[in-house]
Length: 323
Image (cartoon, rainbow, N blue to C red; front, side, top):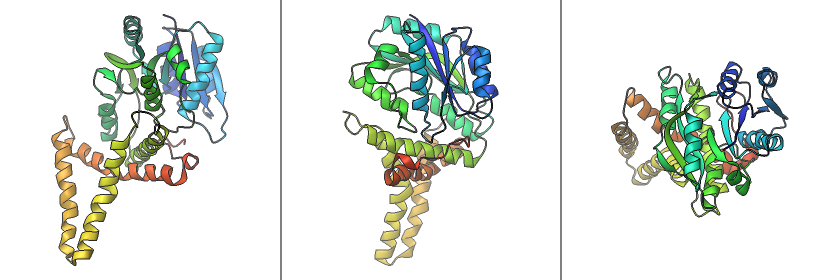
């Protein structure tokens, strides 16, 4: 089963070089789609042997648009490709994944997308990196979605028209939702896939990334309105409840009853929820991770509100400082 690679990136620098060097021993069918980098990334990719697609800095840059552009170039150059492996430019391909994923696709013709375990390079460096590593650690077996790194059948990708280029986040679950409606399956195998390097070292970076997630929740929720299963409704409800409804209800209750002591219920409610989250957590920094999980409801709500109020044109900042 023939395979090609599409890598997307913007100002990834040394991480992009490590990404491409991990791919080239597997295949020379590599397309790098660059989103207006200013650090020499396109030249670096070309020197290493990748074909380069340049996206203009026109205010409409999205990961989905980059992947679609890279895929179009791949199919133009190599029309016989049966599968495509999408990677983000800050990820390093693990050598065991491609053989295992291709074998799985060969044995399961109803599966359109195979992904494995993406893991953080340095989860111990910060609690934020640790949260990312936990986020990537999803259950093995049939899944509802994939992430930015995945091996995809070209026929299934073509059948649904690829990624939705208008989505600024959440483009992978939206596309796989359309694939599942078309009768295809998404599968996560028990194999290391890619090493990721988030480098989230500050609360500000984490806040922007989480706000971007909320924006993506709302945009994908809107985009999947006509599908049998609308995505991210649960996440949006959770964010709204804990960031807005809980304090609002008790403030109104205190005002109507004339009993200011009712406001004590606000910290009590958050404390109970914090204990619930911590009780479900494993590993170190349990209470810190639980606190951030609860705090995340605020930037998620802000991100969702930015989309719901102003629409996709409003955009949302990228935690790497490039969006």
